[in-house]
Image 1: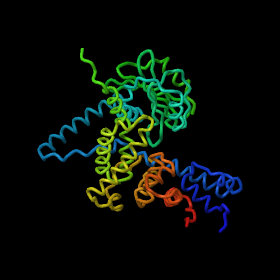
Image 2: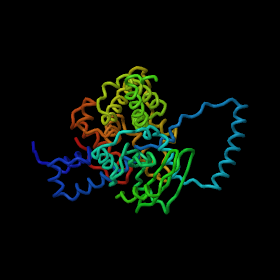
Image 3: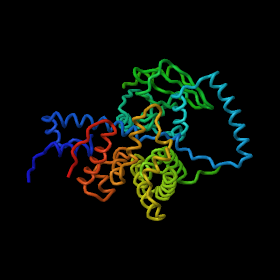
Image 4: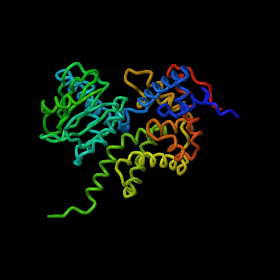
Length: 222
Length: 174
């Protein structure tokens, strides 16, 4: 039996885990353009797979039980009324989808606001690495998770400021044209363009100081 | 003044941790079960079991893999205990589950449907690796397989998905 590391061995190893490379595979790739291309394709496929697995949880809300006919009529009337009222608000103050998704995500992780202990640089670096983002800031970080958001992993941070904790989401793949402010209930937030992406900064029961937002933006590297 | 009972801070921190990780657990359970009601049940059981066993978790950083392992075992246990019928792939497709939809990205939706159609033996290690972040060695331990067997299953899973992504499949491994 031959111990030769063939293209077939290479394809199985790449297809098994394209992010890991044994010394044998490394040596093979250095000499085989076809397997190198296969690995590049598989890495691209994996990025799509990662996005495919990250289902939107807003689609996971359990369906309501079906109401009896009389209640259904009342429900239908209230839905029509709510739609008219909602549409009026929408026309008066359009809420962009991205801001809505940011709010939805932050409200899904309300526990993040209660973090009190400072994260170590390595804990923060680990989260940033998972999302492929750099964030160089002197602001103390109390919470950091690489969260699924719109099919990608994005850093969701809570930073400590003189005005209290602020949530920061680093959205490398969400381009916005200009600064945009949004509010909902106790939440106030801004979306700021940063190169090909954007950052969202949110406060709960307060506002986002411009100086803090500028400090966040200056620390981001895609 | 009422002194706070001992352990309250720890348990509330643990509750927050579970709340934070719950969305990931639901997604993971859904891809294993291919049925959202079953996924919700599995996660519910997982959270109860995790709460009871919370003293076993010494490091919060290890919480995610620990919980994902419980999800996988609860999923397997649910099928053993209730003898649930396995999900018919065609039926899953017919349901047109909105969770599979993707705004303006038909390719992503096709990929999700293709993942749904993978046999359990290929889909499960792929979910563990891509969504769960487990290494092939960890998957082998979890599924009680050899590492080469896991690699082959993962290779075959990706090979089937290559065509959906518009790529030529590789020659199968024997």
